[in-house]
Amino acid sequence: MPQVTIILYEVLRLYPSIIALIRSIPKETKPGKLFLPVGVEISLPVLLIHHDQELWGKDAHEFNPDRFSERVSKATKSQVIYSPFGWGLRICIEMNFAQMEAKMALAMILRQFWFEISSSYAHSPCGIFTLRPQHGAHLIYINFGLRIKFRILNETW
Image 1: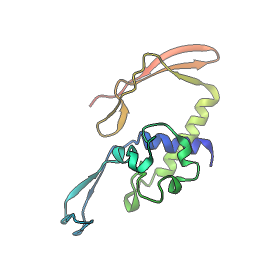
Image 2: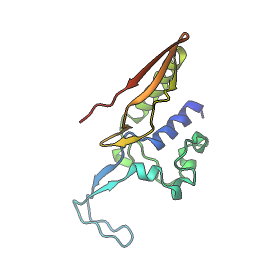
Image 3: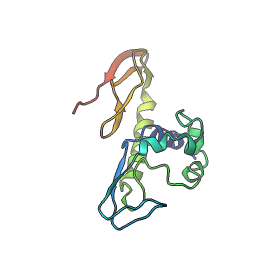
Image 4: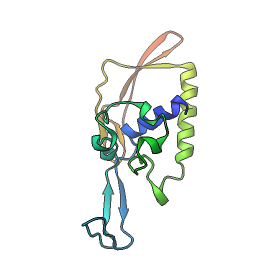
């Protein structure tokens, strides 16, 4: 599997674009001892599941793309625990396009530019509807030896 793909999978595991999936129960359901009547809405905490040490191991909070080196099903032990684009019938129909677009954009950018994280950057992911850096992304842009500092700001709601 190409290295860019497993890096993308790991980035989406650590920083999924959505932090939770909300689903409505279509018919009475009884998972274990729990009873869920029709119409109840449940929230699946994608971010928490993607960082659960019982599911992903002691290094669940660390960046380790090698966990996906033998495909997603091997990394998840065939459990539905990796869902950056949802799962099942309601999975994002643009998932494959989004992943291909991300790989192509990354390849085009890295062919001509180099980025470094600025020393002023403080890592603090923030989740409202989507996950994003709370204070923006402080980067140093390098092109043909020129160093330019800039910061990608978040939109506020």
